[in-house]
Image (cartoon, rainbow, N blue to C red; front, side):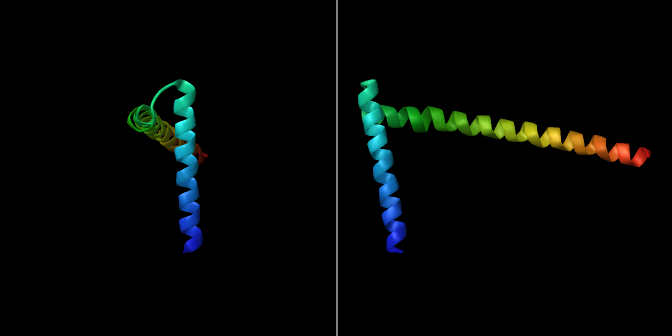
Length: 74
């Protein structure tokens, strides 16, 4: 259990340092970078992945429907 807490603390510290350094590079505050990441980038990425998943699902369903009808015609 101590190892899991150590890993969680390490990941949190790494992500926080990354955001702070990124904010310094862009000359923005930590809170502005957090807002950009969690209010804009994360939801946009989630929507894009949902749309891609639906597209792939429908393409696979269409392909399986075509292959099933091909086997039934033989």
